[in-house]
Length: 327
Image (cartoon, rainbow, N blue to C red; front, side):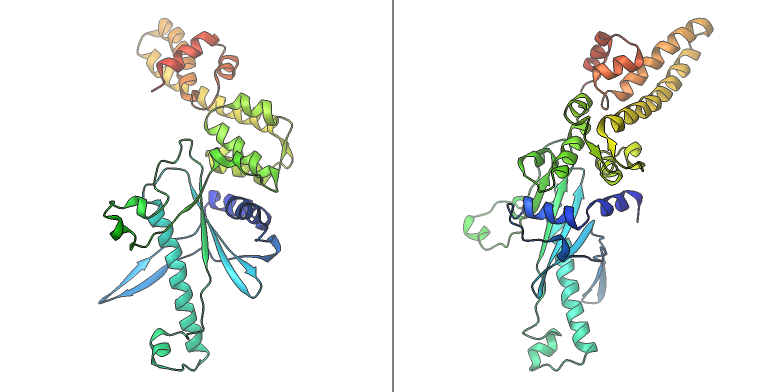
């Protein structure tokens, strides 16, 4: 399991997972209890038997749990998505179908292992009794991208629209989705979830000052900081190990490390260009180009005021560079 996968799994513990599903999908009804959740094997791979061949379908679910509901179970899956994918409804449906297939396969295998007596030919050929049941599955796709999701959220939306009388007979699959940019519309039992989604969304947009103004005194645990790093792809945050860090402290460290990285990259670019232009003149111009290259590298990450403070360049020059380098 990769480091990002471990961070994600550690964050979505039973308490947060129950809060997520109860709030987003069940409209605040406390249908899922943390104490009733059990981790499942995230490997949803299957080998499907087809005529004259064996087709292997492999997929590891991001988060996979089952919830006890009396004597029955509900299976819950989380799929993390950081980019728009126009085939996502079909992919999500496939993940669920694999899980249903595995349940039927396991039922048949257990019946055979336990020498279950079938009542008729239909049960024997099916490998399961008429009374055997499989558990329902609900998958929630969490989209962390900065851009609004403009893809389909159902299987039918992916299809060519035909005559309504035809389409009414075509089975559909609706995809459950949470866009973190819309997470503020939900009232989570754990306010930290809304905070984490909002910080991540603002960080992806480069609104560092907004985060600092809203959350500078908020304390975050190491797994919360790491999960923000998971969403925003920030290695600085993903490597966090310190407990109870204020957002102001975390941002300062992130800015410093990001700035130093950009400074090194800009310095290398400036030196390369300056060397080709002559000794003394090249040194002066190389240093200037180093600062400019550094700022350009960080335009998508830091705001204008922070860039001006860190680089020593006038705010007006930073703003001009942003205008010139904005697509």
